[in-house]
Image 1 (cartoon, rainbow, N blue to C red):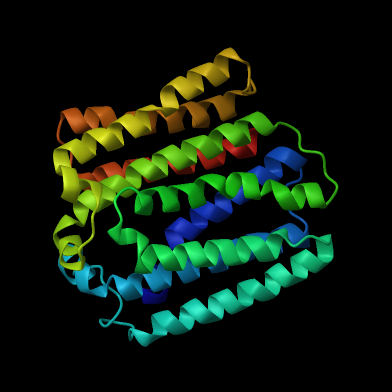
Image 2 (cartoon, rainbow, N blue to C red):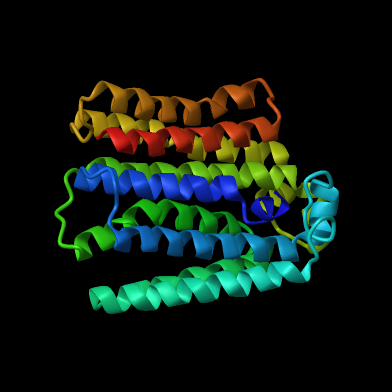
Length: 283
């Protein structure tokens, strides 16, 4: 159980669910081919490695921010985070080399080194930089649906309906950007020990909450524009889940007005992403 908490298994499940939704929505096949499955595994390995190394560098602040949830030095020795990081990335490199050979494209090796470097830099350096730490993670999550299209194209499959996938990618970026700011508010006390320059530390928690609220609310006009341009299918199940995703993301405004605790806001934003990912299966 501690191992799964270290690699953030729930977040990895959301990544897999999103990529599976892209496959089903664009190919109309329920079961992915082996190359796409390997690409999903590759993505989960890189993300899991990034989560492990982030916990390694966050041990000091986590003792203050979330002592009841801390894993390293409590149930798992700290050096195991380094071992997991290197083993996961080594396996991911092998998969990226195979996929690059299989599709005759260096894209997969490039994306491996790019994401690995960015996640390492995030843990070591970017977390101390205002704005950039939130942007980097939101960017990686946001481009996941788009990157998942690459092996589909390489397999010679013509995608069916790209607009919902592209719009969900924007939603994922905005909602994660907002969620990262909310998480920074939760972590203010411990982050101050590491000289982290997060938005709530620099501008205060209330301003940071309003910034997070504004970013999250951007999904509403994007959704309305997409609806006016007929970018979404008219299937009832898709509409329910996708609209539910937007409503949950926009509900952060009510949470801000009624001063709901940050941990509840973060959970609702993640639930919004789950709804959006599920909607892709009903395109």
